[in-house]
Length: 112
Image 1 (spheres, rainbow, N blue to C red):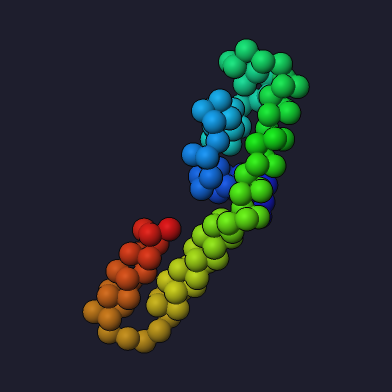
Image 2 (spheres, rainbow, N blue to C red; image 1 turned 90 degrees about the horizontal axis):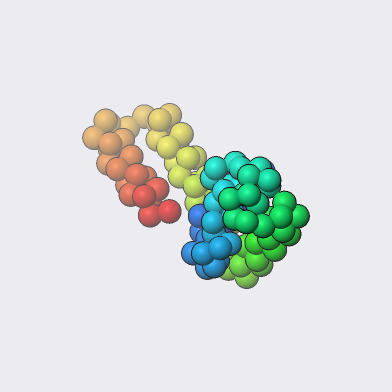
C-alpha cells in the first residue's frame, strides 16, 4: 500500500484504539497534512517529540493490522466490489437485472 493510503486506512480502522492525544497527532498528520513543526507548536511538544510519537503510532497501528488483518480484508473486498461493478457494466443482461446487481453491490460497499 502507498504509505499515505496505508496510514489513512489503518487510522480509519484502528484509530479509536489510540489515546486521544495519539489520535490528535495522527489526525493532523494523516487528515490535515500538517508538518511536524505545526503539530509540535499546536500540541506544545518538540518537532522531535512529534516525530517519535508518529513512529510509535505507526508501529502500534501496524501491530493491530498484523494481528487482525482488517485493513487487508477491507482493501481486498473493496477491490472485489470494483471488479463486480466492471463485470456488471460489460455483461449483457436486462436493465432490471443490472439495477438489482448494482443495488446489491452498493449494499456490500456500504458495509465496508
